[in-house]
Length: 290
Image (cartoon, rainbow, N blue to C red):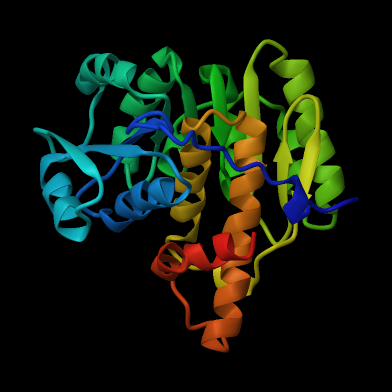
């Protein structure tokens, strides 16, 4: 098993005469009254990845809170406490102005029906994280990058109609990440051959899995097991996707950079006192090392 190296990262180039929007516009959908920070961190992470423009679509009160947290993102506010299925048509119309979509961060399980309906009908390249993953099966996806941890993966496979015996095998903590990734790849090949799906399985060693190839990432440390680091990862994914990178390359970039930032912060903080928002503040340190 070979791990991703920095030389395998791809950074989109900017033309000298570039104007706003040439490097992509992304839409981040999520949030609920209990979860505001997740959505904000995901949106800011997308900007840190280099995309030009991020709009966050959120319930009204969540939107105003995000405005207070950051002046860098645009916020589209919807008159609700949680997204319901009736908001699917206006958001599908709204998505036409964007290059890539992220859905799920802070969404809450009450919005599961909305997430499933939106994901099934979206025509865009889409990153699905957190509560978005818990609400769907792989058959609901079209062109998608999903970012589950092992627990979310088990629920995703269950929702996808995968036999319990296969799910139990994937979940077995005694099998190594390479074997687990190969089983997931076989599921994608046999069960969903017409779907353009990439799975970024988060863990001590990350695995980026498509029907054609698998990449492994070992950057990161136990301090990454904190609330918010997954939201940063998802934001990086959609940020690179919005700049025109493939689903697979966007996941490889995001996994490596997210973990590398955690490693840099571990050294700077001299321990595990760093938090998820530190990843956003110090990401320029990683780019300086390129």
